[in-house]
Length: 565
Image 1 (cartoon, rainbow, N blue to C red):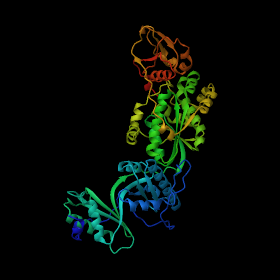
Image 2: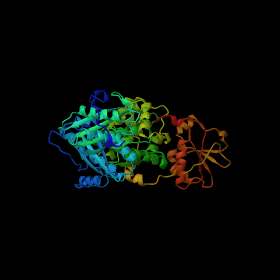
Image 3: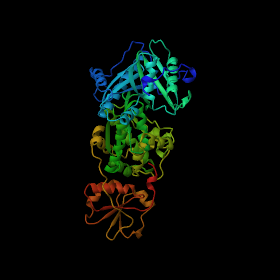
């Protein structure tokens, strides 16, 4: 039946929704700001933001596109995160403007064109030349600061019956056999109330379509209408947003990322909270490990923070680890290593104007994360240290890791076992730590900071992912092979390799491999050994990358890497 042939719907209350309820999937068209604010056009970027602010012609262009190609133009109403709405007038306006800039930057990176304008309590986004519905809705769902967003059809209307006819056209197929109700939000002077519209439209749909009937509570389909003056908004689809604050409304931080569960989730939480989040990685396990961490950082940035430019610092920490192993008491190695990390990160934070460091530490999770040790560690930092996971259970962290999409990367990341305290101190005393650090050559740390590589996150995305160098693994040596035990000396003494291996055993701790391996016989094959094969594989790959083909891995039992620094 054609729309024009529909009878005027009944106004019987039983046929339609008769109450107005607040619904999270609808944008409230509230009055303009008390200061008389009209639609705002976002314009000025903050430091670190892509410089793609709106031109004064955007709305004109969008209007032209809407008239010329209505099928190509899509419109979204974006609802602000509730904590933004309760801010003061000036703060709300600034946050809304920043969110508009962020939306524009993210949408344009996808190849679409867009126009963004803000009213007091919501943002209107017009998009054309877009690559696809799911891609655009996916992008909007991951921009911090958005509570919910709706794709809408905007039109004008003449009277109640015209509203009903337009609603019928959109929902004709969606209501067949379904229970439904009608919800209306209205702004402006009209001869009817919101309840009148709900009754009229709901009654007409129920009379003229084979629906499952009106159901005011938990219907299968909720028909949402917005009326603003003589403009009708028909909501085609509603999606939940990420929430949080727009990136750029809070200060910058430097997140210490290792590629595991914890650091990925802690970084995400600060991105969602509106902080421009840069990344710092301490490389203690070779290029393969670094590439994996880069991929996790790039994933977090491209998915949740791509509205702004972000830096990735890669700090070469192998020599620092080696110096700790040679000069620091075994019980305090883990605490000293963490202190060296926060010293280096504090020195780098100024390059990106970061006011704080972010870590994934949680109280009691491992020996270095007791309150006593955390206090000793943070005293080495010139920046404050923020720990968003400090009271979280491990399973809670893993669950959120899966939700944000970094679990697969974290699960493939090797556990680095370079600095393992045999009996780690859980209540380290600052004076003892300082006494141990007096034996440490701080020029090694200074050198690592100087040689740090700073990358733009966009460049990481343009790089081809490096394929891991294949490494041969054997379970027993062959005639002529030599075995290199790369474990720390105390660990090798506690669990020595048996003489029955049938091969010469050399003791070269992993931190000396780079300098001592080139001096070995190039015509002999050497099998690297650590207790669970992770460290040996990492360093064998690093040697093969340098051109040494005479290296492989000896894989036996053990679990040294199960312990935490």
